[in-house]
Length: 189
Image 1 (cartoon, rainbow, N blue to C red):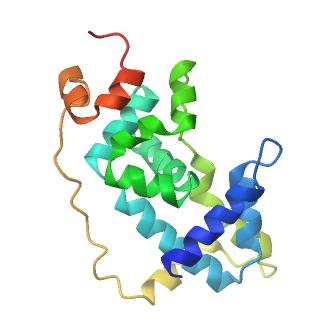
Image 2: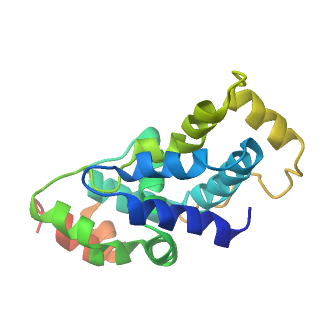
Image 3: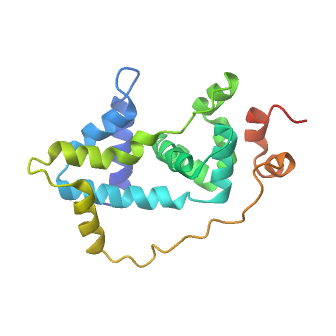
């Protein structure tokens, strides 16, 4: 699945989602309209996009928004970045501090809500859709392992996460993410 197809699925789910229909539910519905192979190709692209923002600077943004951020939390945060759609994802990938302009992030800061952009269900949309359409009981994770094994895995080694830094150093966070720290780091000068 190419990037355009992937982002079309995301944007379609965003457009039909709403207060009564969460994005993750709409995404599962979109994926369930695909073939099993289509769902596996979606998951392959999802992993590429998800892994591309596995970086310290993005993790620092998640740390600010979440008031801390574990490994699992960072996985959910990256799912949330994807759920924002291609434009916001690409802005955040280029400059995580740009998230300070996203309306959902601004709203979360105003009410001191620390779960903005942490969206666990997005990470499992493909497996849920696969389960829905698999009349023969085929397991998504078995099919996914077979799919991955059939692909060239070169280039999927550990990525460079960039420069590591201390997320608990307020001065360092202000230097690297000035707009987000202005929104979320209230208890230090």
